[in-house]
Length: 252
Image (cartoon, rainbow, N blue to C red; front, side):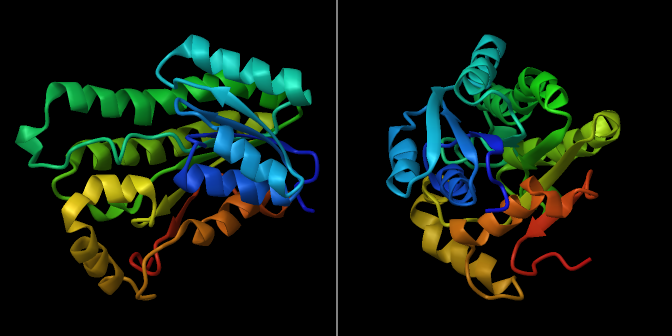
């Protein structure tokens, strides 16, 4: 188990990608802190069912006090924090539309969760990563940030900001041996994608798959290997990078 006894905080852990990360990390020996504004009971039970260790924590990433409480819960349960995966984001809960028809309320909510939320979780957890002698932060971006995503300017912009956060923090935190990277997937077959695409889901997913060198849609299981690699010491000299997990849509 390459992550034996590492404590990993996963935000947005109640379902979809977050739950998949938790299960895979626990299978590699991690202590998992499953944090979400939604109930994480099913995620914790899924981890426990295979012999893994996990706690569930209620987290509102837009509230600094909640982020700090999450970090304290992790320390109380497992003694340290080794990695933070900033996965929480508004996606399935927002409405797509032309850029000039996005409401101020939705715009502000997306920025608060998808950008400010990462900043606040980092502020809460970085002191513990320093205390542990270093660690990793993985921010979940999106293909939308680099390829462009019509009718979702708020989401695409927020995910572009995630890449900026990643690069800046990598330079700032390198002296503490805290590595910061991001992962940018194409559309993943999750509840969030279904909620965002709605009745156009099948047609949209077919177009996305057709633009990929690997002509199938991304599933949560296709993401976990990259996450495990970035958490592990196998990536100890990689920081400030954005890894595209998009089936060959982006070829650099």
